[in-house]
Amino acid sequence: MASHDIDEIIACYLNESAESAAYGFIDALEEAYTHISRHPATGSPRPHELDLAGQRFWPLTRYPHLVFYVERPDHIDVWRVLHGQRDIPAWMADGEGL
Image (cartoon, rainbow, N blue to C red):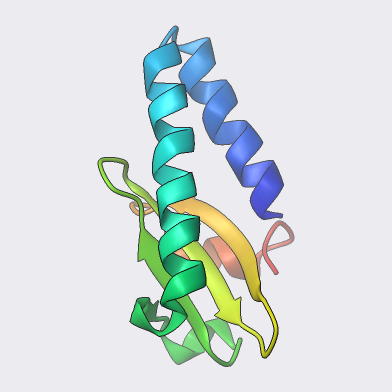
């Protein structure tokens, strides 16, 4: 689902003729992924109402988006990349959520 979120975010920037913002978003996302892979425990825990044990989020630098992920023994599962102003529990619990 995260790849779908990312595609939609980039498409939104491109539809608004904000190509530099789209590239900046990609750079910020890559920085967040690098940070999460090196220091997964530094992300903020999500409230228990999401019903996914161990879920955390990390904010993108200079963009209003949050990367939601779960640390696994041998990898990181990125579940969603969502705008921070959304009703996150409702968004993740609906048919497009987890």
